[in-house]
Image (tube, rainbow, N blue to C red):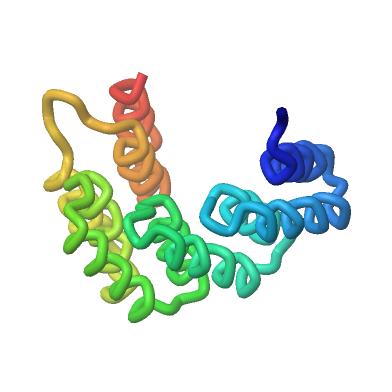
Length: 171
């Protein structure tokens, strides 16, 4: 027997992928009602809200996902991303503190420390930003997301060659 909440969730994800947003929202909300202890439909709805330019509604869904599972690092990181984009550094910083408390990976913590530091300083140089990210990386196995952020910072600085060199390390 198939579980109706799961089917609603998957159908909502499919509709979202087809840009049938109103139908996706309805299906995902039904899935949320049927799967009250599953954060995944809330993640999917939040992603749809981000994609359609409704960050405040996405924040509500990610917060609800954290109510279901306070250890949900993905929801916490997405909340930090939204707060960072909305220039709400204090709110992002609170979630970073919670990631530290929960023992998140050093790479994940360093990426967010770097973003918050860059946001606070409004510095013309990105050296501190890159150093903070690098501090949390395992030199033997650098993670692609951190390398991508470092490469992007080199592109912003106008050093395309250095940025491309960093991207090569990611592959």
